[in-house]
Amino acid sequence: MENSIIPNHSIGKTKVMSLPNLDMDAMRTLVAILQLGSLGRAAERVGRSQSAASQQIRKLESQLGQPLFRKQGRGMVLTDIGELVHSYARRILDLNDEAVRSAAGISVEGMVRFGLPGDFAETWLPAALGQFKKAHPAVRVDVEVERNGLLLERLDRGEFDLVLAMGYASRPDARQLATLPMTWIGPAGRDVVLGPGVPLELALFNAPCFFRRAGIEALDKASISWRQAYATGSLQSLWAGVAAGLGITLRTAVGIPPSLMRLDERHGLPPLPVVELCLHSGQGAPSAALSELERVVIDNALANLGA
Image (cartoon, rainbow, N blue to C red; front, top):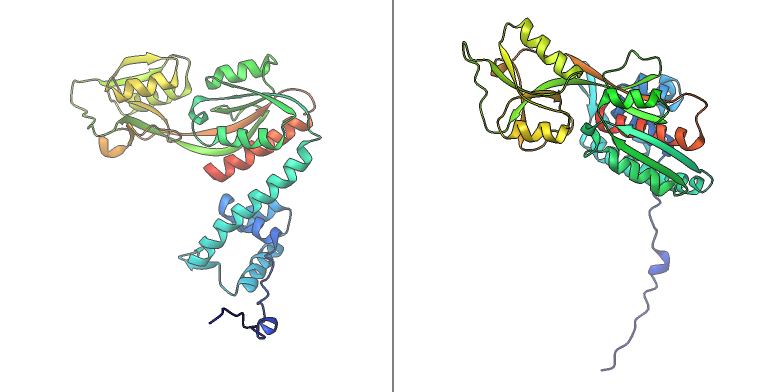
């Protein structure tokens, strides 16, 4: 029997379900709420009133036919659907923004000299700089990794245009991005023993260093004896010394290698203060390239570190 094609007259009558186009501005508000931790701050970020931002979320819920938030205690958290939509929203916005920046990037030219501490050199920041370079191929970006204090000294000498640094929030050019708790850090899988008459061995940056100063002040206040067992001017060297068991150190939790672990009061160690992460700009009117890089660093800091 020969093969034959039987026409399906019902195909032309099939109704295709029309899907709504999710509101891009509403998705941007949703992402901002999760980044900044509150509807009020998110509304300010996207340039709307708090009631208008709330209406945007309700519009999204209406389009999806599902609630995005539910009450938890006195606050609100994402529902399972909300988590799913938030994940898609970030990807959609990233693609939208990449397309806009790529199109606009043709007209952005120049050079930006950017300095950052080693804490962020192996985490989210290199990827952010790579995205910036992809979107703005005509911009030359020179990046250097240095200690916080030296970064700002060089900024003041005109050797950098933009600096990301910790511990200098009192400077008039500081734009605060995040508040990061300091933490004690030791080798993974080893106990820290504080015994009477035995000084705690420390691995520290060479002076001057505000982490060093904060750790020593905390130990002195708690009447815990200590000695400097390892000193260095390199963050990678510091991590290696701690991993080898030459002493514990203190830093933020950003970029801690897997060979190390956080320590706390359960190990007999005193609490530590917080440190502010700020963006600092050089003197003079910012160029279009500098302004765009600032925006990329700020957006990525908020996305990865919170407000």
